[in-house]
Length: 302
Image 1 (cartoon, rainbow, N blue to C red):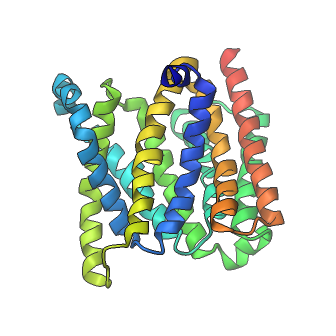
Image 2: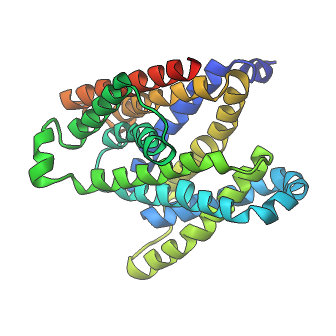
């Protein structure tokens, strides 16, 4: 009864999704104490692939024709959206805070909107451009500790720069979803999981050769179990159901909550300091994305 009620309420499902995604940055920061970044990424996707296989097997057989004809799409999505995004994000968390990473993830909608404008000639209104500019400045305020002008002289913190590269990978994945083959979502999840596994295993093997890597303690395995169950699997189930109930445009608005929940969880769990420039950056980023998306939706309705 409780599960049935949960799966009929898109607002609860989508809110939980963004909590799980926000928690991914915190879990990634905790993982830096016990895991090397490439090793945790490979372990995450190999275990996810094995865990999903029994549930997705029947759907994989039913979708086998589409898999044969579109295998390269799944490989690209797994490599960019899952493997390279996570490799770079977990690396970034070795050099910057979970709060910064949470707020910087809000750069992804900005990148997606800009790519749609330049690659697909989607029109942008003046208010959309103002919103995008506001978000870009907000990310810059966060990454430069409230001194955006130093970007032009000193550049970015190494970890923040890596995280922005990670955002490019996931934005590319999101744009690529327009070419996603029409298969069952479990088929899709398993295919991108095994593609991500294949992409990350060589990185992990290289890491084991170059660094003194050892298996983590029990606490480290607890972190990866959270990452697999919540940001990786349950969030995708909840998000897919939320989109089914209220549509992609309305569901997409909830992504703006990710930096908010990520920042709150970093403060509560990691005891990171929330400083004034985080607040300014968060307000500018979320406000800018809201403004850009609001007028994008209104323009589409017209």
